[in-house]
Picture 1 (cartoon, rainbow, N blue to C red):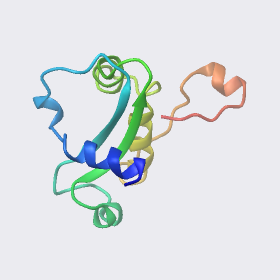
Picture 2 (picture 1 turned 90 degrees about the vertical axis):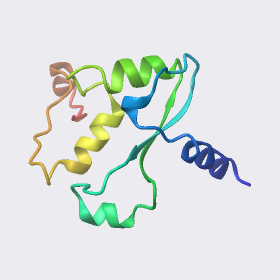
Picture 3 (picture 1 turned 180 degrees about the vertical axis):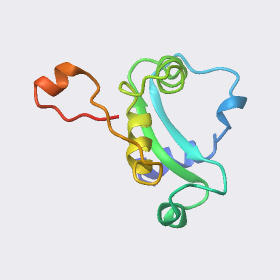
Picture 4 (picture 1 turned 45 degrees about the vertical axis):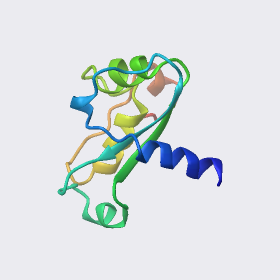
Length: 115
């Protein structure tokens, strides 16, 4: 079995709603974010995703606690969360989202990192 399939099987076997997670690992690792509902805003994407709806695979070099609990889902700022920027890009048209540069420094340097 390929390494990719092993990782996907491990992720699929550990799906848990975010609000039900009691603790996060303090070790580095790979994690998945799934859509667990029936009304994803982009019908074309929802229809091609398999059950369960894996939306994002990420890797943390430090700890899941720091990356997931304290970065992706902790603050209103989305600029430091690749997950939230990726979901924002997917939903941009459907929700009429307006991309905002992460910092003025990026605009000055000609970087176009939005969300």
